[in-house]
Image (tube, helix red, strand yellow):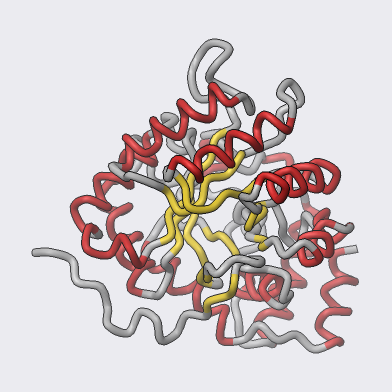
Length: 331
């Protein structure tokens, strides 16, 4: 039976304008960093994607190396897209990236035009797409002139392989250069994807203000600090968690789950419950309270976690007392 999306999917989701572009993104976007590779259940991935779309999540974020193994998340996404979502492509925003190691040799990593062009072609083939909506350079490459990398992004838009371009993991100085070059080329950077959570607030040191001033959107990843800002680790490290399995690819390391952080998480949990939320919902709401944020990326392992995450949108307003209490806890 063909998948028919919920007729109510747009009713409960908020959509925010992405920088100075005409593109709107859902306040909650789905990242396929984990749980969509060949080692994972394809059927579970299918159900997650359908649940997300039924909840109004229209933006699906990938990268060439997502898996494991690298490339498998895109390939699985392509299979599901073809089998379930073919008639909905024009209602979806699909993004991918390149920048980290993807294949052996000098042309499978970094920011060269050679690597980025080959990677994007491979990503399109794996997903069965003619174009992606957003293509990111995944990280700055000190071995490639930034002008070369940004010229490649501009080229992909002119070739019709990407509608928009963005950057990820760029610090303020590097982001300033990239955004200026792209503007001069006539292909503005519409979005930046940095790591940001209650436990990792570096973007507040000037990057968010800079992005707002330059009409660039912001879509943070790892808003739950790889699960630390949830109930997952309050009673120790679960045997099925990525921290316990040492799966890598961005999984939280055991030494990051310190007693000091767990104590902070417990205090944050009390505050979240007073707000009528669970801890993960409050952590997402805490990021979305900022009008400079376009969307926040969630990663889930089960369809029901999508529904739970989206419930954060019911309360993204924080009182000054709540903000002060959170800041004291996080000191």
